[in-house]
Image (cartoon, rainbow, N blue to C red; front, side, top):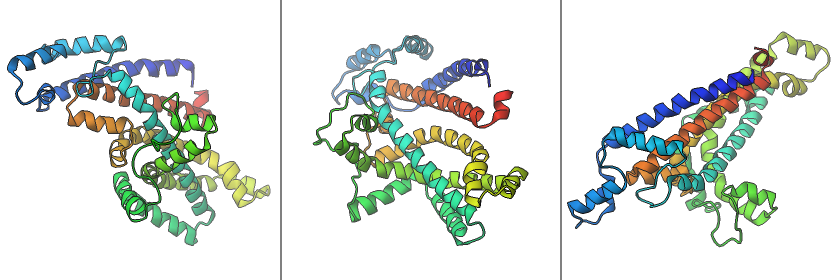
Length: 335
C-alpha cells in the first residue's frame, strides 16, 4: 500500500466526520427535554431561561447553531459543557487516557487468551482440550460484557472481596502522575506500588471487556490455523522435519493472523463504545462514564464532543488496521 492510499483515506475521513457531526447535532436537539431548564432552580423566570439560552447560543435557529459550532470545532473549540461548566475539549482529553488504557489492556488480555486457546485447540485437535475450548467460547459469547462486569462485581467484589470494584487508583496512594496515562507513567517511573494498585483496579473492567472479544478471536484464529495447517506449504515444512508445535508457531500462525488482526482492529473501535456500561458499572473515570453523565444531564456540547471523539478513534483504528494488514500480507503491499 502506498502513502497516497493512506492520504486518500485521511481525506475521506473529513466528509465522514462532517456527516457524523450533522447527525449528532440534529438528533440531540430533537430529543425531548431542555438542558437549560435542568440547570436552573424551580423558581427561575422565563427571562432567566432566555438569558441562559442566549449565553449558550441555543436561542438561534438550528442551522445557525450548527454553522457556529462547526466554525468553532475547526478552530479547535468544542464549546463548554452546560452541566460541568468546563471546556468540552479539556473534559474529554482528561478522561480519554483512562479509557484508552482500559481498552488497550482489554485487547492485550483478549489476544493472549485467544492465542493460547486457539493454538491449544489446534494442537490437540480432536481431543478433549479442543472440546473444552469450543464449549468455553460458546459460553463466553453468550454472556455480554456488561453482564460479566456485574458478575465480577458480585463475586469478586462483594462475596469474595479480592479486587477493587470502583475507581482507577487508591486516592490515598502517593502517586502524582503528570499525564492521564497512569499505567504507562507508573511503569516508566518504576513506581511498583502504583503499578500494582492500578493493575488491581483495571483488571476486572478489562477482563469484562476482554472475555467476549477473546472468545470471538479464538474462533477466528482457530479456523484460520486449521485452514493454514492444511495448506501445501505447511505439509512441505513438516516433511523437512518441523515439529507440529514449531509449524504452528513459526509457519501457520503468521498467515492465520491476518483475519484475526482485522477483527481485532474492528473490535477495538467497538470496545471503546462498549466501555460506556463497563465504566459506569465499575465507576471508572473514562469517557464512557462521562458520556452517561452527559446524556443524563442532556449536555448538548459535551455529547457532541464525545460523539466526534468516538468517530475519530474509529477512523484512526481502521487506518491502523489497514497498515497492519499490509505489513502481514505481502500481496497487499505490492498492490
